[in-house]
Length: 550
Image (cartoon, rainbow, N blue to C red; front, side, top):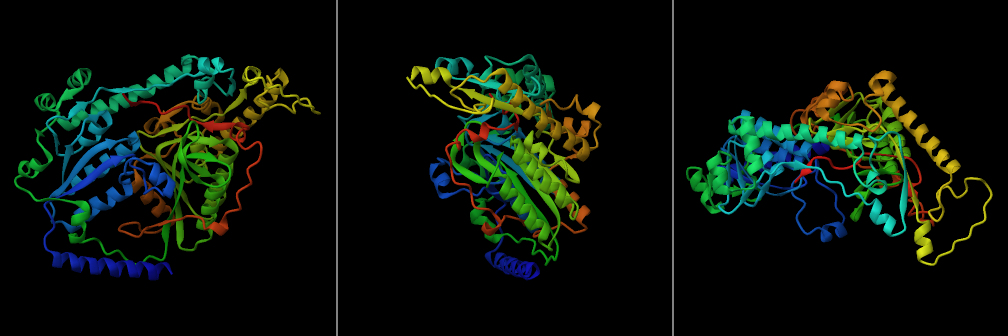
């Protein structure tokens, strides 16, 4: 069935190439919209999410890779113009796209960036990967640097009669410090500053190399920012200031057309029938029990996307049974989540690896539970800017006794068993209950560490200095042995192809795998404890999005 499908796709591509010849020469440059979060693959948004989203989600990295490949394969266009605006992508995603642009330029393509709107640090980090950078006359270059901000809510919760008992394996595991503390712990501050320094060095170095100026000069310009477009031009950060309609003239009178308009005139690689492929399974969002789901709107600590253990396990089992799948590429874009759910996915990866090789590709975040799920894989590939590690567990016990009192609520309970009220928010947890919760957390942490020891071959004594909730960049993780290599999608796919003994060049090498509905057990009916359940057990989750743009 796969070979027949591939043959049909190849025939369609050949017909498209014939049509492209009839349509004549494509434009000199193609506009590529670069906006939004730059997810690895096109997101599957439900109708409600699409309606609630005020803006287009923007292209995925996969779509941009395919567009650049198509321009190179055709060979007639001179290059592409990136229209960079409303960019909210993670640093690892930006790194991936910068790598693709470098590959495009090395192959002879030309890249021009156009900043139609104000550009912050991450937008310029991407834009300066081009041969030339232009901006609209009134656009501002807001490369003001990077910052990390955490809103600590302990005092606000106390005013409302609420508090949170947070048990963590170490001060570095600071996922719920925002609920329980009034500020950074010494360890959390130290870690955030280290990551901030590393990412700031990445930004400064990238600008320095792209614009041919000393790093000290770049730091000076950052401290002066935001800069008006003409100031940025004078400082050497831009190559020109013009309106969008003037850009073709700045490119020597080149014809510039939009991607959707021009793609039909491009010849594309026809591909070939493949009996065996690399299966693609994704773990995207906070890891939870049950099925994967896309929430109508993001929820604090739970996000908008949820990777359900049952859905991911079902996809991995489909990959295991499918004879077309020679190896599996497991894409992980997750800060972590429920420790039990993470362990269930880990088990499926470990089991699958016995019959087929598994390679993990880390996105912007593959930390805590997101790291846990991949440690049994044959290889792990991270971007340099991926945030990973955070090997640790945290547990939150909400306390609303004072709030009940303020509202005039007087709950009375009868129980048998000393710890029967262990998760009742209307009561203060006693020493015995807290000790029981701590034992549960420490058990999960021991299991987590053991998975890493077995999967990564890191001795327990050396792992102690890497674990405890410590977060690492992808490059740091590679040096410490937490991952095997730094690279992007192509590197991970190449490794999977090598291990599976299949070629991965050209289109059609990847088989996306989604579980069929019949592969999923029916979702459990919501019960009275449905709201409290996510916090009932230990969580393996990373603290916060460090090094966000200021």
